[in-house]
Amino acid sequence: MENRHVNGSTSKLVTAGLFAAMITIMTAYIFHVPYGANGGYIHFGDALIYLGAVFLPRPYALAAAAVGGGMADILTVPVWAPATVVIKMLIVLPFTCKEGRILCPRNIAAPFLAAVVSAAGYYLAEGILFGSFAAPLASLAGSAVQSGGSAVIFLALAAALDKMHMKNLAKQILQ
Image (cartoon, rainbow, N blue to C red; front, side, top):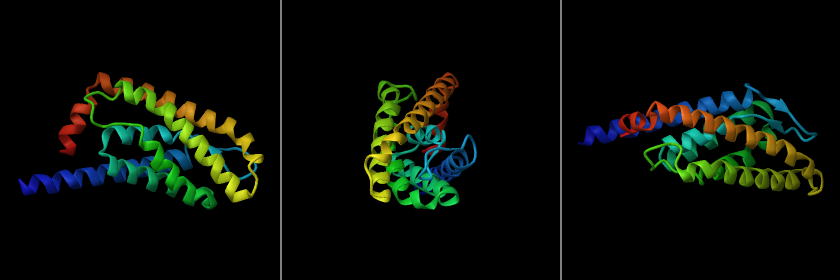
């Protein structure tokens, strides 16, 4: 029994690391579009954060989101990394990994709650970093595109993965 727990913990840790790496690559390099005057950019890496949140237990999903998002910013615009680490952890919270399917009612609503958290978090961070709470209003359009695009990608991938019963397979691997 002890060996199974070690293997389960190792599987979760490795899977979290893989999600962190995929989040980093998707955020920093794939569909990475600079936006605004303060170094922000639009990306769809949040879709992978959402997937990590539905496959991994919360502590592992939080770590994958923080490391993946933080590393992407360190590689591209380091000034945003501290805020990103916190914000990416917060956008994991609306999701659940406890359902048998990815597209349960909570996970369908979660990307939209995450969008509000992300937009508010980056608005606040930009206001603090650059000393103005008027200028970040222009960044809200970019936040909407980023969050909306990530939601669409997540929902499409989730529907496809549910048809393949991927959640059940993941549970077997991560036990």
